[in-house]
Image 1 (cartoon, rainbow, N blue to C red):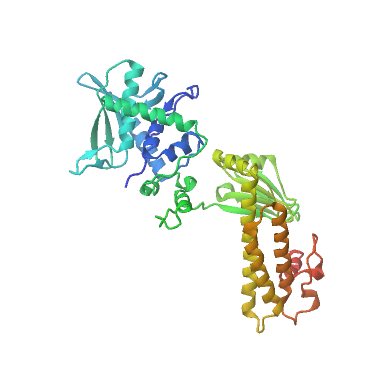
Image 2: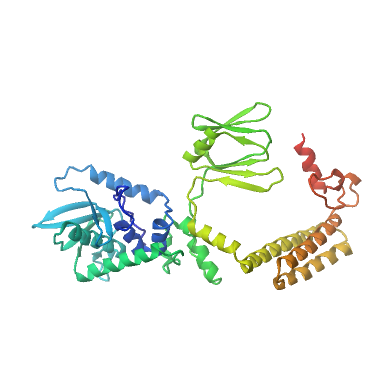
Length: 433
């Protein structure tokens, strides 16, 4: 199994034009077009153990005392390519570019070492770039695979030059495209790809083929915690590299930022500007929730997905798509409410007739939702479901409960004590303790 070998030696100066393609981007293109798009168009990058291992390899190579070692930034506007060669060496009067990979070489049918297709395209691109930028003749490039200590020779001929030109043309086409390429057909490429948690290849395949049996990809969980600030009047500040949480009673809790992944501020809790700056530097997302549990907004320093935003705006401007999404939401909510009532029957010695009737009527209403052709009709069906659900809730409560614990009807915020269900009443008094 082969994972992409990322080239960490292409720190091209910032004034380089966007009209040229990075050579390492062609490596990603040959490996997976979706990987190329995520990195080059949406500018999404992740760092895992393989990334740091590759960096260590190149750092060690740069420390070697080798008179033939040389680093060279190159760019060719004519070819539309730029990059930095790992190493240049001269053999028998010929200039030869070298690439270093930490993994193992591919093997042919005779078990002979050869370059992986993505590595082959990359070294061909470097060789072609040397010809165009320096005006010299380059006959071959070489790749050193350090895991099995193999050196592979790749010849630069007209077929190789054509391959590079086609890859550059494909790269420019994808950079101008507003849509992500589909996931690769070879799902084994996804198992060790660092961008799998962003690309979501399994979810994409399953969405198109419900019968598909996925090879499970389990990205490493974020070990950092999500901190919820629930009490109104609580303020979040900065203390060195820590978040200082001060409550209304002046008690203080200090949390190291290395342990925090997200900070959720409920009700009227506050956060200082200095704390926000600290969260930006530590990639901590800050979310604001109203006292009633309504989502207000987020402050997220992480890069967002361009395509997600495009499709979100497209959905908001499409009445048919909005109606379809609304149908799904109402169906999910109605089915959840109906299942809750059905589960509530299990502990009852005798099932009330009104409860059974409400469950049956909810099923009838749910069947009408897919046929609705307007949001107004959908709102009416949603109201019918809610009326049936809350009308049946009192039948799940024991008749022996005190009157203060009974549930009679719904009302808007703030809730009246007498109309609260038992679980809400308990939570109400608990929150006031």
